[in-house]
Length: 290
Image 1: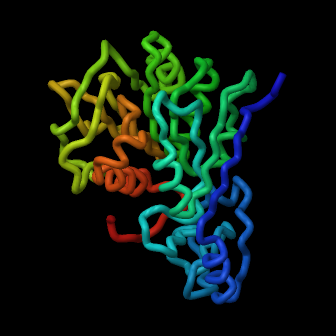
Image 2 (image 1 turned 60 degrees about the vertical axis):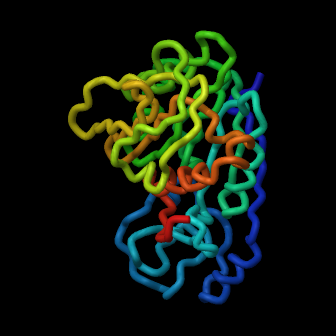
């Protein structure tokens, strides 16, 4: 029996040599990733020690208020982001999406389900969680841990897989129960062309949505806010959820990661850049939209 999530490591940090050289030229040369605690400290005041940010050393070297905000290629994805893909891929190939992330310097791990608990220690390893085709339900305790992690600055993207079973909704709903958000009703198909005014869809006019689910959210109170991003037939199918210091984009489908759409719809890449920019994860870059 495995006591924790099984991680399939896939670090393809394209351009790492160039980025290490940048750090050395700045007088630092510290290329090791920071520990989890350091990575979560993002906007504390710092005394500048360099005009240039070093690579992934867990320090705000240039004193601009952001830790490890390195984007050497100016491609819209921070070079120090640590991303976990939770669950298995959907029914179609999504290698273009993974290549896109890796080519932009992010470190991506596919995390497969096990009998181990979804713990805070596990979550603190990452800047962004992408909920893919989840393979098990989650306990109330795990959902509470996830909610607390988000409220304290965690960021996530939730998608759905499809197997023509109630578990397609039940599994992600079990994890997001603490957020007051759920996938509901029968399948909805698009594309999405009815968008609200929101940063996630800036420059995007139409996005594939095939056999996904509508999204229902409880009334937001306190430091919680829900913003509709996209609708199909009046049903919410994309929702931006903010809670405390953290953010979650809930998407009712998974086609935005499939190769078929990446090869035929340039707006997919723009959408994902927008998503990461809106999430504002712990490693934060300044960049021009693609």
